[in-house]
Length: 154
Image 1 (cartoon, rainbow, N blue to C red):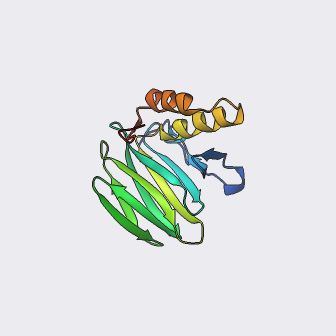
Image 2 (image 1 turned 90 degrees about the horizontal axis):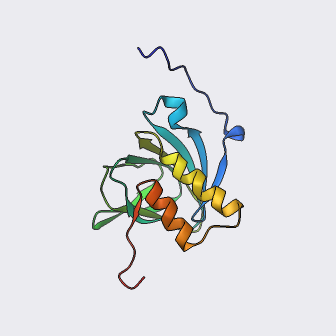
Image 3 (image 1 turned 30 degrees about the horizontal axis):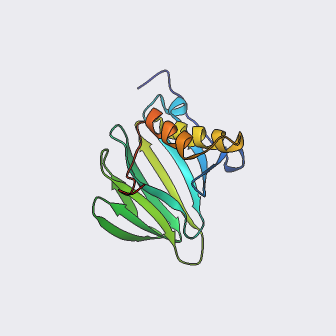
């Protein structure tokens, strides 16, 4: 047993709500809460929003769909995920998702090890400060080991 860790509880109303790429991220557990082992978040994804194709070599990511529908890109394959579906994306795998259908999609996300929530916080901070741009977005991605898969003509 790890004596330095204790039970962590987050009430949804107190979870930070972070705008990232049109999605609202509510951080439920951070690396600080889990001794670095994991992070967890709730994502609210209006139709047409999501995460662009990307990969991160140092983090695995998992998604549990609470409601709505998402198209999940994993490698070269797109999977339609609905409420109750779960997906594990190993580190280094190109992935992204888009909310489809008329309603918001909600997913519970997990990152292992922890730290992915710091990427969300840095994006939200830049948006709040009015400094978010493609250049700052790329710098934030690089700082957190997120490699965006940009189109060849971008």
